[in-house]
Image (cartoon, rainbow, N blue to C red; front, side):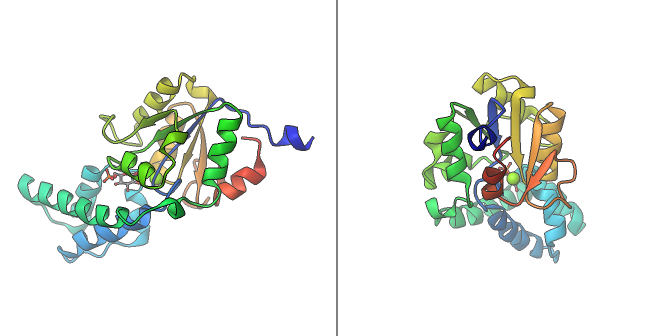
Length: 220
Ligand code: B16
Ligand code: MG
């Protein structure tokens, strides 16, 4: 019974990066907050939820909209570049200790059971972060912000990830911390597991606080 209980059911396991594997969401927040303050706008944690899983360009558009300002294309690009440089200065300090609780154990469990593992992230910095935290070799496929034309909540990133690991959409489960990402997974016809708060991720099939809880449940 114990062993059966711990067997995983799905074939493909797709992970978002920021807020699921590592807590880079807090670095994005700090870097965007600084940009907003240049326009007298103070980004709140509540509004920040709407930036999670959203591409860099779309995030900046939202912030400028909330701040009630419009800028030239040149200024827009300069702001996006500067935010990314600031963000990367935090990423530069990252190492394997930044992997969120239970994630590595869960990835190793998936590999030992012969499951396919993919990354499905909006971030253009995803490979760098997986390298810095030393877990890039645990992934069969990586789909990130450099591979997609449509941002979450569009399902493109997860559909490409499923294709790359050769698993049907309905046999994939997606782990996501963002509303946009959960919506993308559901639209792709995949099971959506929220990592975080059920208040925010109410469209998810199930929500867990972290991967230690996911491992305890054991039947995904
Ligand atoms: P970058 P995810 C997303 O990553 C973040 O949640 C989001 O806040 C960020 O704007 C986006 O990546 C783009 O990141 O500026 O590094 O390309 O959650 O989809 O892994
Ligand atoms: Mg995320």
